[in-house]
Image 1 (cartoon, one colour):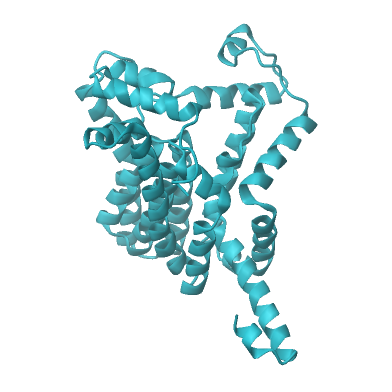
Image 2: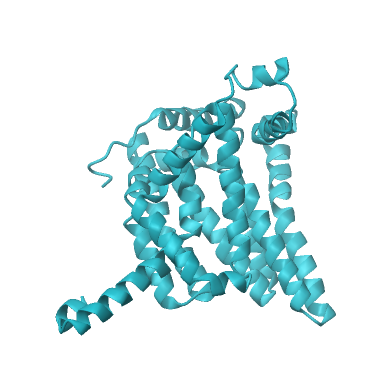
Length: 351
């Protein structure tokens, strides 16, 4: 599809300009309004390798979004079974919206891969209690945070999985390893940012390097939701956008979610959640539900201030709920197969 769809968009122009600033050695200019971000850095390296900007961005999007099936399969095979993992990977690969946005020169496909890889590494780290998996998971979380702000929510599954494993463990060694591994994992992101600061951006403030605006907007949203008034400082930060009525926000939120999931995937996910409630009851998957809820809340806060809830904002939620979509599709296909066998149509049943 990269040969048929255009890769340039307003965000693509922004990231290419930031990558050009990196090539020119203008590191402070390269921070832009996204602060330190690895996506323009990747674009600059690909361009230096000889690829034109548009080709480099589209090729990277196709490559990294395709590679997302690797950690997705590894994680779901362990969390559910191989049939669910294969089905979920196929459903990810043919999702029209994610195919469309993989071609554009934006940071989202990179974040999909890093988020899924971090979940896979975290699953193995907590299950096997090995330092190497904790370290790799920490690097994946750090890179995800350096790609999109939502990467910070990956601390939710590591905290929840570690707590559940701690409550189930009876020996002190496992509990100490859980604590030490969790601290190692969480310390890598601030350590990398400190290294980047001391190497490239010494003299700047932390807010010049790390994007903290979403946290401030979330705090302002919470204060206004609880009945506070919008101050002049808040208006300056939010470009004087007046709050939308709650029904209008709900309409735009539902529209973005419907476009992100597509009606077919959404209905299959609901079906799978009902049929997969045993896995949910085991609490192995609940941390991922909490992660999805955190991302949905962040989308709602962003909608409150920007009046925008695009379909691509929901793609990370689609990815982490793919096992339930897969369970829903498998259940429908199994029921259809049984029905066709009863009608003496074995060939159709096999199909």
